[in-house]
Length: 74
Image (cartoon, rainbow, N blue to C red):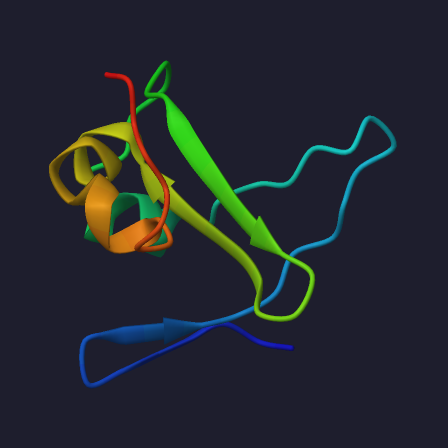
């Protein structure tokens, strides 16, 4: 799949390397100001798929990602 920007959104693909690594495309890194050394958070659900976000965004929005019945000990 070729990468494409459309209306401020990005669609593209990347392959998983032999060590399980993926490259975040340059356009996406720029869009979210992701720099080398930044911490990323994977959110995974067998039914809904995988999401990747920055730690800063996750920290600010953690309650939106968790089930209502989840209790946090932060």
